[in-house]
Length: 304
Image 1 (cartoon, rainbow, N blue to C red):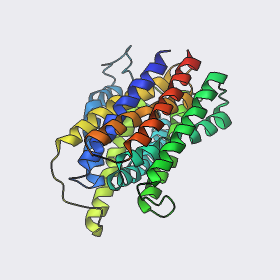
Image 2: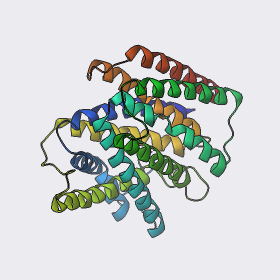
Image 3: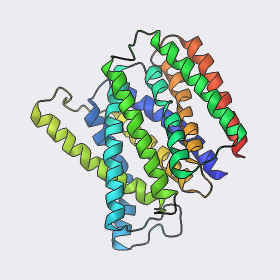
């Protein structure tokens, strides 16, 4: 069950990634943060990209091995990159303007949608333990949402809440594409191929987005100020995504379970929200998180 523990490790790294983004958003605009973070991540993978293009064979026979890719495979990864770009931009806009515990609450609803589509598209079937885990987790998410509303955030009209829901829905589409690209019988692309080229294409997309914002006079654009938090973002997202993609590529992995486990990153954002950002309603949110942990434990038991 190595794919299960890879998903858990990915979740905790993802939590620190969200905290670093929240910290970086206090100094820079959303587009610059994402541009530099994905650009740095792309530099990590550049030797592997060049190796696949020129046939150097640097990582052959390892988990970092990647194919050169056909035009169709690159097109599919580029489409995924567009979807991820929309998800990251809207998600970071919401995170920048909402309490991190509120934004994290909304993000944890994503597995519900992933579960539905996993069953419909991939024919995944969950056992009793897994269903129990998901139901318990949904109760926890409901409690978290109710507590967040006490903070005065209008879930129906707040534009940053809408941004978070756009991020969630596009994230669901991206997750479904991940399973299709790496964990299905149709393509079965290597983990590093998807991650490396996705980072590369997102960087190009962010360059275009920054230029458009700069020359159109958009309020989204602000002059860039150096921040080491952006380097931390790049490291965490590169490591988290690698573990996530690796988990999905393993035989027997289930998208619904991986997606739910990855949302346990909210535990990290909760703790950091309490310590670093001094957020409110911690007892109520702590109860919901305890219930969420029970749900995650049931998922782990049902998968072993």
